Image 1 (cartoon, helix red, strand yellow):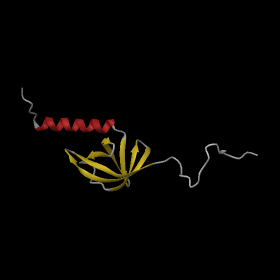
Image 2 (image 1 turned 30 degrees about the vertical axis):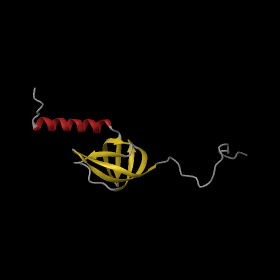
Image 3 (image 1 turned 45 degrees about the vertical axis):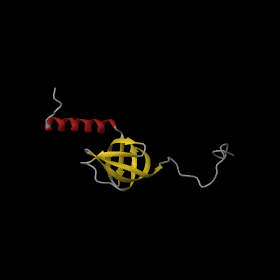
Image 4 (image 1 turned 90 degrees about the vertical axis):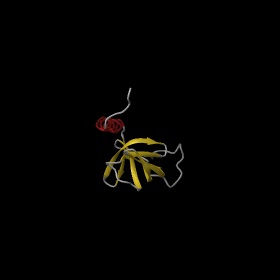
Length: 114
């Protein structure tokens, strides 16, 4: 039995795999005003479609749908097939409130009622 696939069939399989990865992932990265869908992610990096994304470098925002997860400093680490792989140099998690510049006791009152 032969395992040879014609180039057209192989291209169709690759396109279907890429479409499935894009559909299943909610993660995306935003560089400026442009947003790119993340195909795969791991602990210290992620990959984007090489046809759609340029070689990004610098500060980007990481989102899960519309929820802001982190602000990351990234570099392109290489290409694997039709994906560009990026690594995090620094990651700062996004917070939903402003950081305090003073200590707040855990049992401190929330408001003062008279």
